[in-house]
Length: 317
Length: 115
Image (tube, rainbow over all chains, first blue to last red; front, side, top):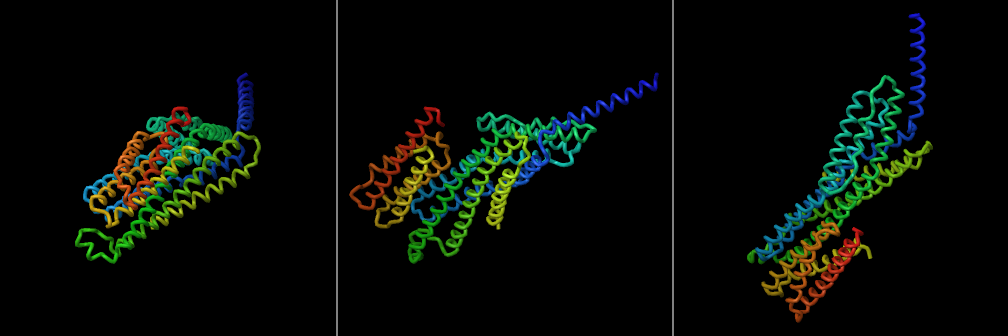
């Protein structure tokens, strides 16, 4: 009787395992190619954040330098003081105005890192804990964003905590892809808002840099016009930039133009980010395994992000 | 014309006025008092351009309104007999009108819930 019961129990266990494996296989909501495409997207965007931040910082600094050049050609002390004060206020306004974009980048960065974890080939306990932490950080960042800017974006990091450890690799993979599909689905509305905030800020950066480059060009021209009278002008306390100042202005102009290119490239990348994510979402909803269009779009996005990184290096050199 | 296009036009008009005032403030043919006033006007226009670039279209309309009134007041005091100052008065007028249009478009969009 005892032996019979044991055999029966083993048979029941085998049956249960077969059913579980079958159900798990049918739950694999994404194909390996689709997972690969999400992984490529995450890799393409993981270094996106610091690039536009660099352009914002360059604009703020350029604005101060251009104001210094303007003040150097002013005569009235009160006007000089007012101009410097206005310039420092503007510097702060630039930083305040850029905060929304910076916070958007933070969320997107966490999102890329979470996608990398969720598309990992070897999902382990360690990765599970990391996904959970990243998911929590992501939701905290979104919560802060909502409270700071009055938006009502839904958090989607919590889904990453839904992968339960099990001795069945196939089951984990199925659960992992299910969570991945859900995260991509829920992230899409937030991606719209975040990339839009970045694009708006970068449009302001482009306009701002254009203004300061124009200012510096005008100041250089004006200074050159008055250059022959340096000695006599000094006696009347009029400050005329010397040769070193000209060189400094030209250097600033170069930096300004490169920062403008960074802003323009990052803006294109942000637009592509949004469009690629929409396609990614459509793809994860689809049951077809065709990811060619998506992969070529991801490739273009990667090229744009890489171009921005290259420009960023040139501004730092 | 969209709000963004109206804003770009306003920025361009302010930039033109700012550049004209910049050149005029360095002109030694003007009296010290006039140059001093031009330097103050230059800072006002510089700040206005920055504010336009930095603000969202539906934000800071009161601030822009104050700046326009200031520009219009200054314009009334400009000596129109002087040819160079007369040109500045003209570009200031264009800037003020562009800003008034921006305020109107943004207010209409805001009240109709577009922005």
